[in-house]
Length: 171
Image (cartoon, helix red, strand yellow):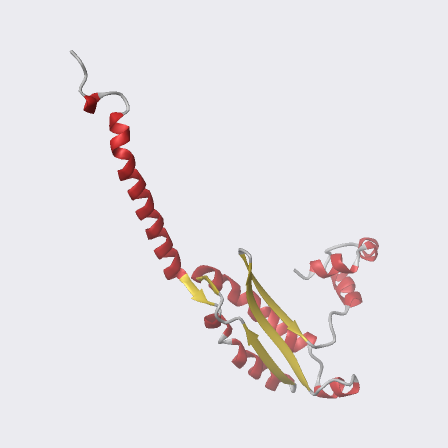
C-alpha cells in the first residue's frame, strides 16, 4: 500500500517547522518584554545620594558638592539593589577619607567645596559606574600598614606589593 504524502517521512516535520518558528519568536518577544519591565534607570538609585552627601558634609564640617551624570542608563532592578550598599560605602569614603576639610583644601590651593562625581555610562555591552572625588587621593603607605595590621599580608609581602596591588586590597 503506497504512503500518502501526509505520512511520508519528514512531512510532519516540514508542517510543524513554521509553528515552532512562530513559537520561538513569541518566546523571544515575551523574554524581551519581561526583561524590559525589570530595567530601571540608575537615577532611581542615585537619587538618594545628594541627601547622603549633604548629611555627611554637615556631620564632618565639610562643604561637598555632588555631581551626578548618566541617570538615564538602565540596569536590572536586582542589580540596582545589589549596588546600593557598595555605592553608599564608596560615597561615604569619599566624604570621610577622600575630601579634605575646607582649611586643608585652602592650604592646598583648592576650592573650599570638595567635589564628588557619580557617573553611569554604557559602553558596548557594559555599564560603567564611576565614583570619583577631587580630594587628596589614597595614602598608599597607610593602605600598606593597614594590610599588615589586619593580617592580609606580612610586612615583607606588603613591601613587595606594587601600588596597583595595594589598591586592589581595598576591593
